Each structure stands twice: as C-alpha cells, then as structure tokens.
Length: 397
Image 1 (cartoon, helix red, strand yellow):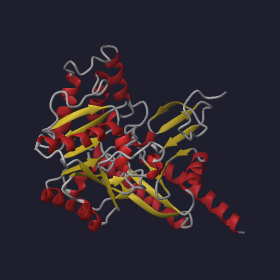
Image 2 (tube, helix red, strand yellow):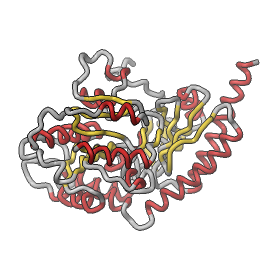
Image 3 (tube, helix red, strand yellow):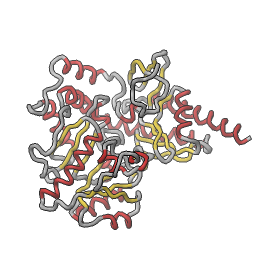
Image 4 (spheres, helix red, strand yellow):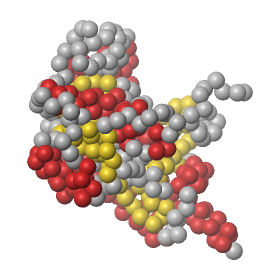
C-alpha cells in the first residue's frame, strides 16, 4: 500500500504496538531492547505508571484552554524548574526547536531592549544541531539541512568546534550571544570540555554577550545531573530543554534569568499549544521521578556500568568500535564500519540504537534501566560487533 505520508523519513520496517520500561513489542510480537528511547525522549521508559496516571487523570478533566488564561500546572512546573536551576523564568513550548527559537528571539530582544538592536548575531559551533525550523537549521549550520530551502536565515556565525581563535574572530559589534550544546548529540556525542564552557562564560561576560545552552538532548537527568552544564560549574543565561522533560509527551521549555528575559514583554512571543494542561501534568510527573532522592545517582551508576562493559566489547572488536564517547546515559560508539550498517545489524539483534554524525551510533536508553538491561544491551552490542567483524573479514578475503 502506498503511504499517504510525506517521504521525509527513512523508516525502519518495524511498527511497535506497546512498550514497558526499556522494552518495545512489535506488531509481530517480537521484543526489542530500546537503547534509543525515541532519540532521548522516553526518559522514564515506556508506559511508566506515574506518567500514565498523570496523563489519564488530567485527560478526564481538561486538555486545552490556551495561554489566554492561567494554567496552574504550568505555574507549578515553571516554579519547580526555576527552583532547581539557574533560571528565574520559564516559557513552555512543544519541542526543542521551538524552545531554541524562543532562546534565539530572547537573546536578540535582550540587546534591542538595551538600546542595541544591531546586536543580533549568534555564534554557534560546527557539528551542532538546534532543530529543523529555518532559524534553527541556520543556527546548526549543517549544509545538508539547509540545502534547497532558500537563502540561509541571517544572523548565525559558525566556528569550528574547539577553535578559540576562530571564536574570537567571530565575535564582533553585532554579536548577541554564543549558543552551544554541552554534548553534541547529532554531531556524534562530542563533549564540550568543562574548561571550554568556563572560557565561553568568561568571554560572554567580557563582551556583554548572553550564553545560550541547548540542553534539548542532554537535559533532565541524562548525564546524571539534572542538566549537563552543572558538571562544569558554569551557568548559562538562557537554556533550552525538551525531549526527556515530557517523557514522550511533546514538551519543550526555554529557561532564562530575569535579566536575559528583560525584552520578552507581553505580546512579544507566544504559542497556542505550549504549556497546555496535558503537557504540564506529564512534565510535573516526570520531575516527580527525576528529582526523587537517588534517581540521578542511579543514572550515574548505570552509565558507569554500561561504559565499563562497553570497553570490553571494544577490546574484542577493535576493527568495529574504535572509541566510546559521552557520559552517563548519553554514550556514543565511534565506528570503523558505517553507522547505518551497525544500526541495522543491532536491530537484527533486537536492539535499537540511533545513528549520529561523525560515524557514531548513540546509546540513549531510558534512565530507568536496570543492571539486567545493561547486561542484555552489552550482550547484543557484542553480537552486533561480532557479526560485522565476520562480514569485514569475509569481504577482505
């Protein structure tokens, strides 16, 4: 049957019917261990009972009113996020791209409100991914996402990752902000060293710039802290988050200091669906779990265990896996075989992983995984690497 859907995705030939924890069940009854979590979205796994209860309870009361009226669940979630972070204010959206759009507009408006509307340019870093809107593909700067969509939106200057001289050269009288992911997800699980983040903070302070952190993929516990930048001791002025914050429900947020948000007055920005009662109920339920005592310690323990066991797999298959990147439960395997081939071979082992740039596959399991889940995933990764190594040997012969 010909699909009625726009063919913008190269979908794997599997459809899932239900899930539980870190496992998915396909329509044919086969079980798959999910170490992709919907690209870091299903932070609490599938059908988490607390999330299911929160969503169904709210669904029986009220779904949507619009932001023309107060939304108590949003007030509560905003207060909890502010109290747990550097921020003073929150703006809720539906996705990471929308959260980043809000961050970009906020940085520009900050300078305009201060009498410098000419300061609108934002410096970003090669390999970044900030979303799929016209502004966020320009911010990311990857040509494969820009081609064919007309002139690139002005106002973004990319510099090579880790090139300080290029960064200094890019900062000028029109620069408003620096924007960076603490760990590049789509870019291949490339971690920004803490000293680099500290340097970016100092440069922003020196030049009167805002520091924007894109924590869409790294936030809400994935690195073993609520947000990844906390490991460096650096705080941004503006931060975007999404994916895991809704546990599978579409939810994004832009968090900021009151100073950075000084230009965002009534009518300057908005959204129809963002912050609706359903999303707020689920977002609050996610925080109930993630902020519970011991949860982030669990993420750190599982991440360390996974990384240690993956090291032995790499030792056994050096011709397949050449490097292990990342921290806690945002890990990447740098490969000597095409990452698409590895992803497909892992799927044959009933393990789901996610390809990324720089020929890396991402391991982004639900944060609730157990030691047994880790052991099972490592077993299947080992089998995947072994299968590919045999294929490589056969091709060489």
